Picture 1 (cartoon, rainbow, N blue to C red):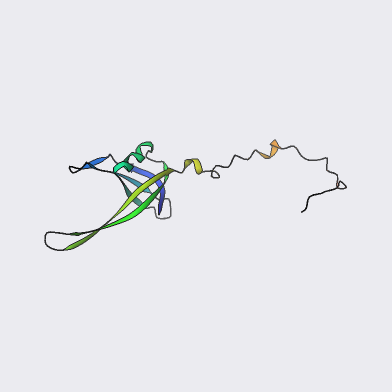
Picture 2: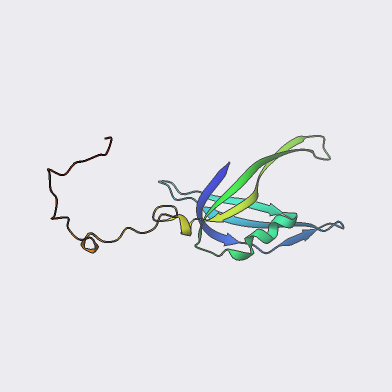
Length: 125
């Protein structure tokens, strides 16, 4: 799955526990009629993927949905969901035709005024 939008916030890398679990959060605001602020977490070595991105930048994030079950000390079962990112791409280079070269303006072309309708045309179409 993917989430697209503009980066609203990038958090600092946090480290937890004695084994050094790392987590970093990013919030992306979707660009639709009712914009959503989606928090995506990157964990372990994926936290470094956010180093080259900044607030306001349009991005596409590849995500996995994660779910956990937890039983509290009173014996009640609780469920938690998280959105975990595993790839992030800038959308800026895709604007304007996804890598297509720019089309020159019309006045850059010379008019073809030397057409002769009687010339033999060997094109098959």
